[in-house]
Length: 302
Image (cartoon, rainbow, N blue to C red; front, side, top):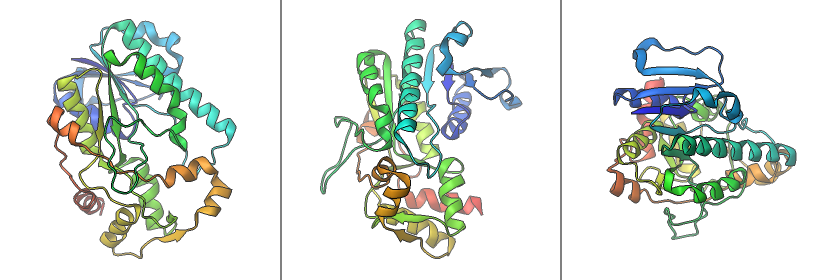
């Protein structure tokens, strides 16, 4: 299959693209980087310089594909205060990512896999599944326009809803783990809120299974089997590293310094089910709990 990947040079993309090539797909990665080469995969991998946000400039070069995968997203810097102006910019950029990508899929008459996030609000005893509406609160609110775009074109779309992705790279390694090792990381509030997690290898494998099935019109929550709290996840890291556990920080200073959008995102409390992905896709996470994923990861990182 000839696959166009939008966001293929990012954290998830760096794991997904090799898996696509192992499956003998021919992959084109659209990238804004001026120079990017990888000779390990020969002629089955092509890097094309361009920006999906400027579709009119590049659409004539984007032809002859069987599938599009959108995993690109706007960059939000760690600890960034999201002002109203910045929020409007992020919302416009997010909307354009989806609008242009889906329009390209319609023009080429091919299916598209899009990526949102497992953002829900669950109360005690509740477990969210794919029938629940996505919670557009905090930073995820930048994607509220994408829900309408997806709904209007869902017969051509598979929607992926991954939890927070951790692994060797991305925000986990370059921010969270780095700050923990430097003694700078803080747990906001009491840390008893749950956040869905997924190892990057398992997340990439879920996309492979979706490609094999291509169940258009469906959405899939991609998370591991165990709903852990922020405390559990963070404490397990420090215990494995044999260092002091992270201190807690009251929510008020975060609200004052970083704004309500950032605070509401950090304090999201969400337990999800991955049953649909397992049942319909035959997907089975290699790391069903955060303990298994973190233990191997931290050992490999030394």
